[in-house]
Length: 338
Image (cartoon, rainbow, N blue to C red; front, side, top):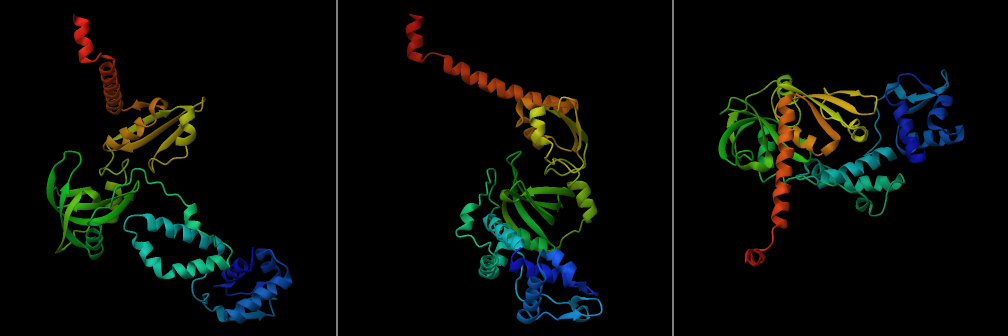
């Protein structure tokens, strides 16, 4: 650790303690000699104004009277600074980086502290890559949705649904915003359907905040209804998928959390059998298909048949395009028929 880290660590060790900490213990924690410890103690007391006292009776150091003392200004360890700078950049690259905007006044100070701590890196932002392959825009009404959510007001929206390509006007009570797979969704109580629904923010065409108070849904009910099934689709689980991944695919899948209640079992050959609850199958089918021949649906039969139907449709599409390419051009067909 350098001086920056040691002073920060020393403060953390002493903050909130009611009893003195022996000098030998401090040296062990800071991995330093007594002489170095005394320099850090003097800096903490004289330069930073810490109410540091030497407790002769216990042969250690503490803050006077157990005082609640915080280091002046923004003060982080080198590791925390590096992590915060990376987080700041990731937030800035997200659409509508509200938290990144809140951090704007502190950015210059953060970077100065980072340089002082030895983690300042020239052009460090160019060394970060954030790949957002399937991300969609948060839409033009993110601000209205967020405001209605914060103020606990109802929201009137015009919504263009993807699954049936229909436009509908809905009055909803926003419950929470969800960032899922780099895309924003609104979980809300739909007053027309009298049920919980999830709306993709990029499909909200118009939004108007109403004066009526939002209908409140208990958090436990939201978790039970919206968080108990696979993926983004709302609804309590109605079936359990049983998937068998090949030994090769299992090396990746075993480290992935598809659902909090998933159950995994290894087979002798290294294959992985995963069981997970789901309500609607559309998203689950897409995730199954991306593993191609490395996954088999063992159950339930309806899910297996749906995956088979998609695979057959894909094969039929390839067969039709291959047959079309193999046909001779019209002029050549006429010459062959003569």
